[in-house]
Length: 156
Image 1: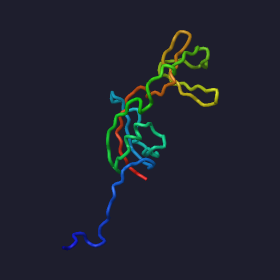
Image 2: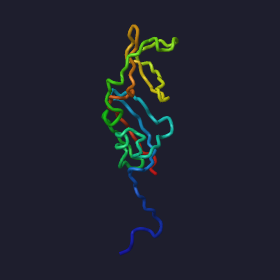
Image 3: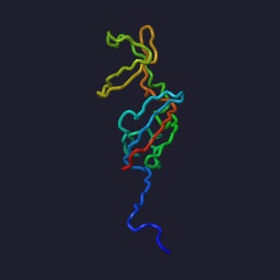
Image 4: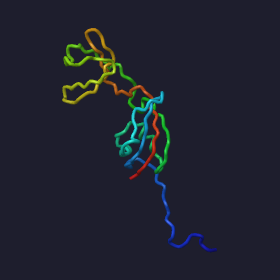
């Protein structure tokens, strides 16, 4: 029986799949359940990260595991696999007198506070009262289910 492949004229391709410790590049679009886009890489370079290094939220890393090069898929990530649930202890009331004079506080406004160790903490104004404001130190996406459209564009 004669071999049906021409000698040395073919190349065997291996479809690699994303596994732990791979460095991958992905394009993604992240949406909330109401369809609002909160982030996307489509108009910039793809996102590059090492799988399993803790650089990404756990649900995103799990979502890309076992994907093939150029594969596209949609995933939904529960809050506990994303930015966690909203923690009430991360809300704090602050007297307006502690704000710089030029700031007119409004709900949703972002603020930054310097922590005693020198780190900067991002805050959002959750409520404006007569003499104080309530700030929220939770991640803006805490408590939300996140939906991603992902495409693997490189696996190393």
